[in-house]
Length: 246
Image 1 (spheres, one colour):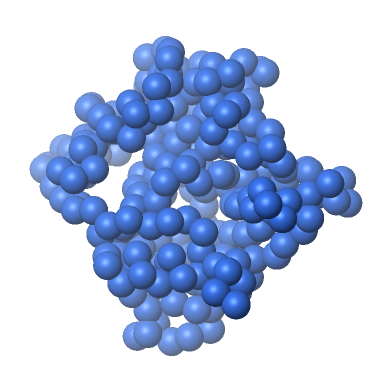
Image 2: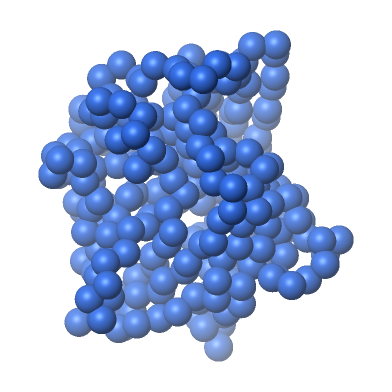
């Protein structure tokens, strides 16, 4: 019974006050062993695969249909790999495979670990604003990002980004429509579909960044590919569905 509860047994809705995503391009061979056998890497020009860090301020997260006053506000950090999955019917889905999830809320850690497989841990989060910059940091998780506030239509792509322009970069901006979890013993794929509105990612210029977790992955030749922010997005996740792989 308890294992079944982890399979996203009901739809969940929330409001993303902000979501800041740093996406790193890595030679595809570096990420192949980070994903389960049922998934393939979502690559660019069959050369680069991508790992992203999403820092999300959520508001009013609750079972879908419940009143807002029953929702909860907290900060989420997700480390995800861009992947593809082919269903039994042959439909090809683009999505994310989660490597690590963190939150600043003990309640979210407790509830998230009952109803998902994401293995949440709690950490400290500090947010700072100046007239021209925004920063998010954590002492416990040892990460720091500082970005310029977006006050112009276009900003430059990060140096060494594999993308030629932001049209290419937006394909790997996230969030993607699907998130996947895999139970190897049962060969079961759990598919969670997200539904978003008013999705208009804005390119952001990074001033500084450091993620201890990414350094621990021993990724060679990883480069910052893009940085995007979305604000004020209604979002919900459908009830998870399971299919047996092969």
